[in-house]
Amino acid sequence: MPAELRAQVAAQVPATWAATSWGTPALDLPAGAKSQLEAAGVVIEYAGPCTLENDELFSYRRSNTTGRFAGLVWSHD
Image (cartoon, rainbow, N blue to C red):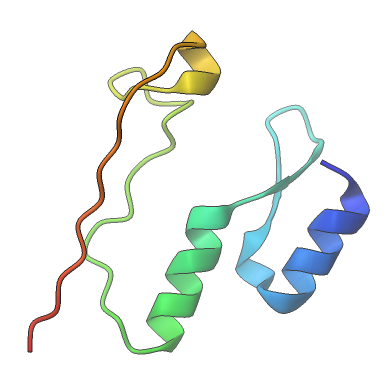
């Protein structure tokens, strides 16, 4: 990703600033979402590991095949 785009996004959500394992510009979107939710008072119970780096999880980037993911969000009201 272009370093300029990373800088623009990170200017709005600093937690997204990241680099790949190769040292190239990247965005950590889960970290950005987590930081925004926590700032809003939402308790994060599990944020999950990186799917590319965890062989126990499916990763399109690693296997180049399609798959399915699910996420659960609920309110304790």
